[in-house]
Length: 177
Image (cartoon, rainbow, N blue to C red; front, side):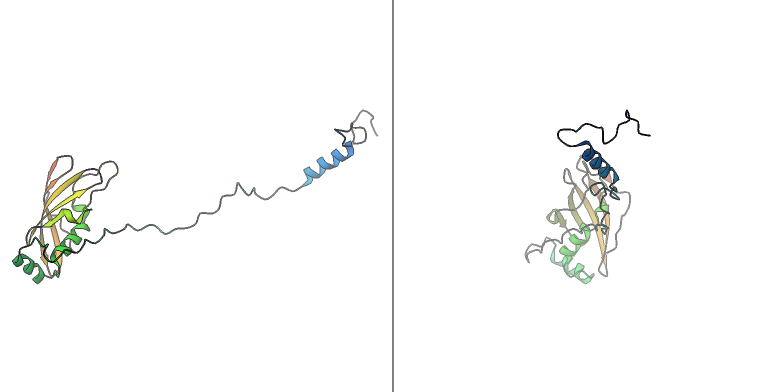
């Protein structure tokens, strides 16, 4: 039964001072261990659910000093009668909430908007001009507006894009407040 030519733990030579029977026992013990269910480093953590980010609204315009109004007194009083208690501030805030009125494309990933409230001027009871930019180029809009019962509707009269192009209004683009 025992073949003297067949290797066994008994007739294997010792390796660097470790008897062959000890090497055989170590190898057998290493092979008989159960593998972990999954490697710890290879198991990714489940993603943490996050709520979608809401776009941040534009900041409110700074308050104007009492003598900074560019509106004539009679136009200001007219707008107050139409339901705007602070006509300049309310018109500027409403316009800043409507960047879709800008008919120019942004460059290099920029989004055109009324980012600077000081670039918006209310000229009269129904006219305004507004500067806009996309972070790279600036442009300008000439606008008309109407106010009824505190609701503001805008109409773009002329658009000058930052690349020098002029875009004629394609009709009223009104936005109720």
